[in-house]
Image (cartoon, rainbow, N blue to C red):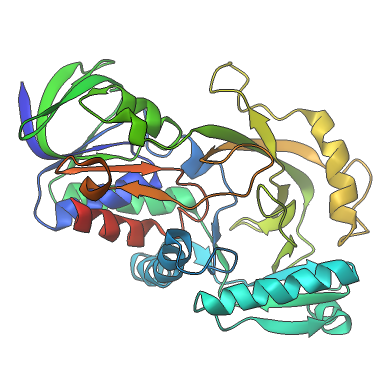
Length: 369
């Protein structure tokens, strides 16, 4: 039987940020990770965008933590030499109906404290991005891109420098709530039973599953769990764009947008593919036929996309609290006030902008434990 002050379940970008914060506050921290490396799921299968905080409802956790986290993240990247670029993005309308949506987006951004959006006419947008076709656009100068793996390596380094450690290949099998703390039993390469005073569930796609495995957790308080796959396509040529290009949002995400990686490579996505669960060996494979629908969506704002240019890239899965056909919900960060268990924090539905908000999320969770 091992004993440690704090256990964090999950070594994705948010779990690492939480563990780093706890360790730097002086706590003894162990991170339990089922995979053999950091950030193997949602944290490394996304658009790698530093979001400005534009789209989320005013007062929501997503809006508050994204806006605060963005500034923390830019400073952290600059201090640590993490590859990133404040490249900016254009949110583009291709019809009068979409122009009306841009008005709503700008108002929502301002309500969130994002007041640097600038209107661009079609000629102004074309002057910035000659390959772009639109009727009107919003420029977000504080949006950027980041090397997510370098970020997670930095978080891991900070955690270990503060005395924390990560146990890889160590899936949680079960646990129980004690009168004062928790007992967690793991399998994998390092089966053990560990007691801890504080427990943070940051298991991403499996957070609800982990919570249900804890004897004494009030499972009726857990939110619903849904999975939405996002497929990305790449090209063999470098991006004709210097900025990120986003269409107006759709119900389940931000639409098929243009992102640029740190090396200048061009990628499109994600789309929206709802899953029944998390089973199947080909879960992360990209069906080439899905690219057929990408062409029409992309050519609304990039008409010169050549035929046959899109190649299957990669896919990620978003942990959703809403089901298909409904509007996305806020993050759920359940502390003792929600479930009644001292020392326990559960993070659910941490999708975008989780990477951007990671440092702010870490501080938020530390304050709840």
